[in-house]
Amino acid sequence: KFKMGIRPQNFSIMKTGHEAKVVSKEMLGDETQVTFTFKNGQGNLYTLVEDGQADIKVGDTIFIKIESTLIHFFDAKTLIHFLSFSFY
Image 1 (cartoon, helix red, strand yellow):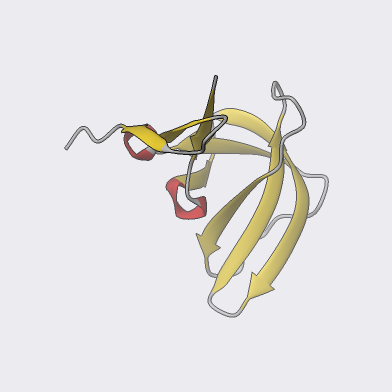
Image 2 (tube, helix red, strand yellow; image 1 turned 90 degrees about the vertical axis):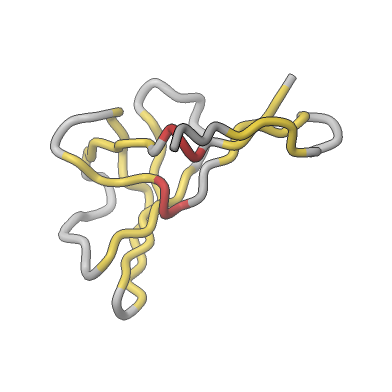
């Protein structure tokens, strides 16, 4: 078994993509942190960071792009990092 890790800055809100629901939103000066769950997920919470003041509300449906070239995989038991994708 493995765990997948994606940094908050590697998610983006787009017009199309993976459907998600906004759980919380926190404006932090020059950026906004948005916590969300994927529609087809298992209820796991994810956080993304958007530059500026994101015009969304808790409960909104948003569409997420995942920067797949920056996904990290960890052993579920030891949490040792064993694989990263980097297609540059």
